[in-house]
Length: 80
Image (tube, rainbow, N blue to C red):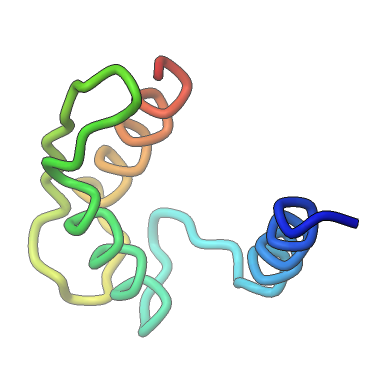
């Protein structure tokens, strides 16, 4: 097994252990998601494009702005 395969398996295990987050979720995992989305802003994808995401306040509340930012990020990833 190569290092790329091992890293992919480790990421999949890590992701599978995260709670399901959706609009209405609250807590530290939501704050973590909000911070990850903010960190993703302005970073170019393979195409060289950057993305602007507005999660609102980093407050641990998965509200409409966080939901919109997640959807925008997901669509951005599919397009790149």
